Length: 492
Image 1 (cartoon, helix red, strand yellow):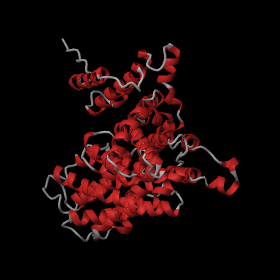
Image 2 (image 1 turned 180 degrees about the vertical axis):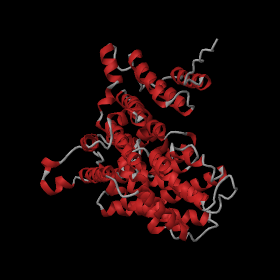
Image 3 (image 1 turned 30 degrees about the vertical axis):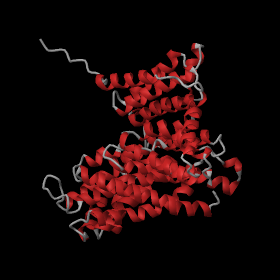
Image 4 (image 1 turned 45 degrees about the horizontal axis):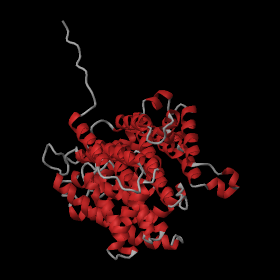
């Protein structure tokens, strides 16, 4: 008799029990007088959810579904069942959440048409005569793709990493041959460290950025609502400086054995030849990306008047519609884009919980408590802001998800810094940049890191050393270059 397949589950019982214990432990702690019963229960559920995410008790989407059920069934937001479920599902009407989901769908066209690979190989054909030039080519390719690929994992791990592997293999640099030092180690590090920098440069360059935008708006009472253009302009100069220095710094820290690579340009040209002439679908994809950038930058509105201004999410839907109408993408492609639908679910749930914490007064209580503690040290706003940024950055050693980290800490830290007198625009911008800079630190810091680390070109010690050094370099660039740039832009 054939054996019946065993039933499998995504649940990791030990991690789940630990998360439940943490949530219950928080709930049973003495409740501050300033926090309502509903607020305290929401905090316990939120911390339990974050603990489950960190412990990977289930996939993020599954945990998010459970979080929605807990919020609705517990009546933590309202005693009315209909109102409770509406609150639990409230974030799914957020344009920012749909912006990221639709942009992930759009980015599928890069891999389906081969345009992403073509861009990477073209850059290497131009600048690949030296190993350092290949490093800059990978960084340039990341930069070109970043505005329209909100999955930084898809960009760095799915598009750029295979190109990096092809180049390393062409020079006989493989882990199996114990020859990673030839060129592969350096290229793998550049491949990875370009990713956090470009993620910081555009709202649409990584999925958590719209969450940061929302938390900034909430912390400032909507006084600061960062548009796609404002974010991109603010991060432009520090991002370009960071991209210009990063390949050189890594070259000095881990110098490759192969310095000159005249064959790399030939290799890239051969790959371009194999790809053939640019196809109809690649041309359409390229045209759509240009339309997206023009509309996100409000160019038609600036030239023709406010009637031509479109919301960023509307623009994303326009781009996706063109790709569907022209057949570049099919509806089956969209249905198969699991990352987009997964992002829609978990992003919506976490944004909902963070928003409810704010509405129930928990963020205000936590922020005032932190403010009083820091103020009691006698620090000025400069020292307090620096402390908040550093704690926020390096606490990422304890997180395997940038979204979980931002959801757990960003809102409160923003409120505290602003309450202590930090200049609003520079402070929120440096916090926004830090939410991507922290991806540099570990081999589990974001989805891209295990993909590239898993190719075994870099040891754990080398990865962590490079990550810490680049976190310091990037933070200094954003504080100094960014600070001056924001002064020029009139942000403070």
